[in-house]
Length: 260
Ligand SMILES: Nc1ncnc2c1ncn2[C@@H]1O[C@H](COP(=O)(O)OP(=O)(O)OP(=O)(O)O)[C@@H](O)[C@H]1O
Ligand SMILES: [Mg+2]
Image 1 (cartoon, rainbow, N blue to C red):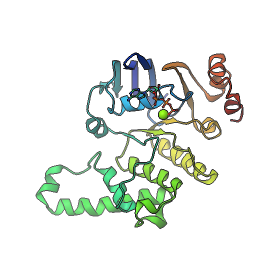
Image 2: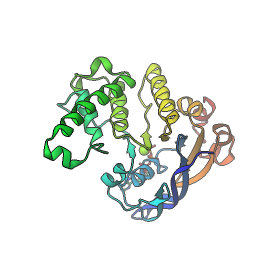
Image 3: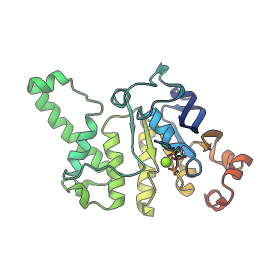
Image 4: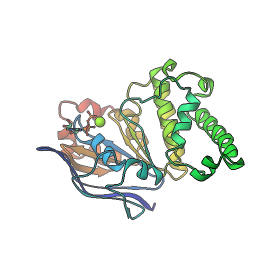
């Protein structure tokens, strides 16, 4: 049994009269790959935004390692090892791939700010080590040949992989990927799946939102299903695909479940 890293209890977010996320209890263990599915507008991204601190919950709690983090600012949550990618790519235009990845490192600095300000040898060493680590991550996601490329010259799929590299640069304990496979080629999907397995194998908790069942079902150890903000099922991929409420939520889109 893995240790629980993330635990939400009664997590709720309202937008005016709309309850986008309704009393969600979700656990993710260290090294676990948890998939999150649900129809458009089910509240998946809103849940991520709350966990990342981008949205303040209306009610409920979020714990990391048993410590409450709800209500903390995004940078404070990132500093505790929570990294995420967005549903849409967010490259820093005008900068290279390696520079984009190094920006991700600032989310969770490994060297003290004092060292950097002091401009000491420690800071110089930090800079060199950062570059080496960025290079490693860029190779890891398969962008080694584009390390110096300006980011807007990348293909869509390469941009997606860069987002993952930048999130990994923050040394996550929990990484949340919002539709990482959307718009990717089959080869790029395989690459993302391999990346996810590798980082989970290193003990990182992975929470993946995805509509592509063929990508998600073989990858996730557990799947959580949101519908109209409510967690209607959690279980193994086989369990949720056979769950009557899940099948009902996907009525009209049964092919999506059956294809997996
Ligand atoms: N900032 C906001 N203000 C008002 N309503 C919002 C806001 N963000 C999300 N919503 C609403 O909350 C609901 C859940 O949206 P959310 O983006 O979390 O869904 P989702 O499951 O990620 O959908 P998709 O699969 O389309 O990405 C939707 O009805 C959406 O319109
Ligand atoms: Mg979304």
